[in-house]
Length: 216
Length: 216
DNA sequence: ACCTGAACACCGTTCAAGT
DNA sequence: ACCTGAACACCGTTCAAGT
Image 1 (cartoon, rainbow over the protein chains, first blue to last red):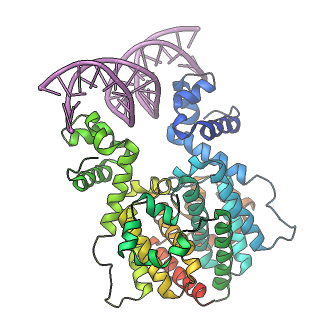
Image 2: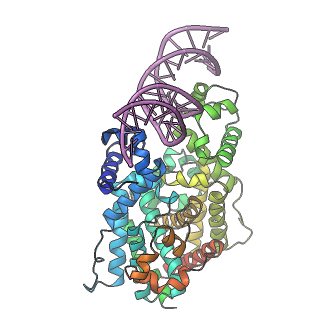
Image 3: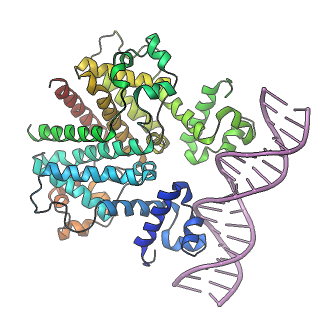
């Protein structure tokens, strides 16, 4: 754990993952790019797992830049601040899809992650959510946003609806009646999904939901 | 892709991952347990990635057993059927935490996964959700449930609230005022979280949310 | 048709040895 | 204090060779 410009090193490793995939981020490859042997990395990064944690921390700090919060004092309402944070979160996985495989397995305990939580807390308090409910709602909201973005980037939503059924050989199942709701919804499942629009629709629903929690 | 009792083989591999972790599921280890060399697996499983897909498929079929849906014709209302599915989903990651690292990176195109979707579709239709909104809501609901369960099992929720801040060295930040909402919520963040209760509270909120979408 | 042995090009990590 | 070389115990996958 030496001080030698770690942020820049993490930035280089993030770029390596962006360009060559997460599997290309090996101790040997990372070391070579720094002009070192793999073994010389250990005093600096601790282990491979810690190296990945540091890379994730770097992503969060890109999306949550230090300094005053967006719209701090500028009169942005809580809804607009949450929209901003959610879109930034989705952008993270869009730009760095390899992070989808990592995010659910490591608690983000960096200063930047705490600032993001703090801004969500503040928005929920301003919305009028009871204090005792704020931590739970913060976890639920970040789970929705991260889950959506990770599903999209990682491929869980994959080829949607009918196309997914087709690949899984399920069209026969739909026709023979063993998937009755799929059959009833065929008209809607056949349409291609506009993922941008779906994310925005989800966010609108989330805001409405927060308002109902706040008002009773 | 040969027919020789693949479900039992997948079951053995799931048990290997449960007991020794996902890293222990190597082609060589899996082959050895079947009395084969690693290379003999390839005609059967295709590749390591497909082997992992098959293991995930096996998990879904354990949690979504074939046959009539739970409460089919037994008069269970849509809420009770969704509660059942959600709790089964959470149980999956509880019993097999290694699946949390995989779920967001692979579309589940098995017959069992489609049956699970179908039951959620049917419940949403019965609740009165407009047909055009059902596919989006299904994705949102499964994302909430899977995201919660994966966060819990994978460690993203990790040591919660204040404890997380402490580990990240953030207590000083709270005291100096750079995390004002954390400071305001300190009373609530200090309490240990009951994750069972939080999941049930989230599910209640989800049901309320579905009702509001259905009635307007 | 099905399986094996040997090999290729890698991994993360340890540790004694160097300067 | 910091780094290297060699080694350990592994990976997924290819491919010619066996029966």
